[in-house]
Picture 1 (tube, one colour):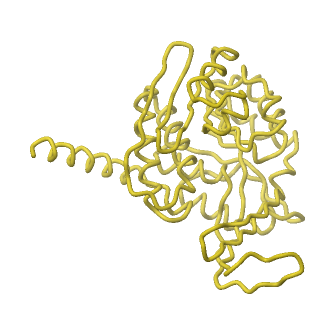
Picture 2 (cartoon, helix red, strand yellow; picture 1 turned 45 degrees about the vertical axis):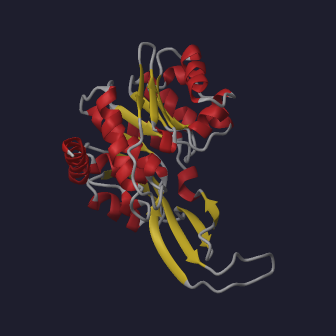
Length: 305
């Protein structure tokens, strides 16, 4: 499995109140963390047990990104490092009420060339899975080249903009998106109508529509599957979507049927929202199995009572 996606360094500052124009404020806390949908989804898939290769581009300041990917079992040989540029990064202010204000700079994520893409894709062949988002440049070129090689393309269209709207979704195998993104792509507001719209225009597409606390819907030309969200005490949903995608695709890559992959991904996403943070909230495969077993044990005890 190859993930050609964004790699970011997140700089997070804790402040009493956001800085206004012309004002300087002091930060009461600071953290430096790895981020980007490419990195997060790759680590989720690797923690789920999949063999994952990450492709992308980083600057001279990106060693921490390589380190965290490697530490989590993701192969980094297809990440190009350039010394004359800087990684994509965010500057986030978090105030005392928990609100945030984010400035994002794409950096090397938007310096990927067609030649670099060709070199990466040359190592993969028909049937291999490619995961892409919309946080790097040259997405249409990647889709075209991957489609010509008969790769199975998984698209997470985040953020939705003109690049995504102009893509030929006939070349996509799996479209994994949330309700807001589905509405932006189709003009529909109800989940069922979003699904109907996508499959009526692209009947060979496999669509996974995530609905937060209302669960997930899977649809293709023959089937519709609804998976409920597992009730938990949520504290931070930052990584839930990336966790779901990584776990879902990892199970699909290992041959699981869609209904089983949906269930496992829903368990992993539920467990992730019970933890604070992004990367730190993505569970391991063992943790998901224990979480599932504990839920079954609770059910049995309640049925006896």
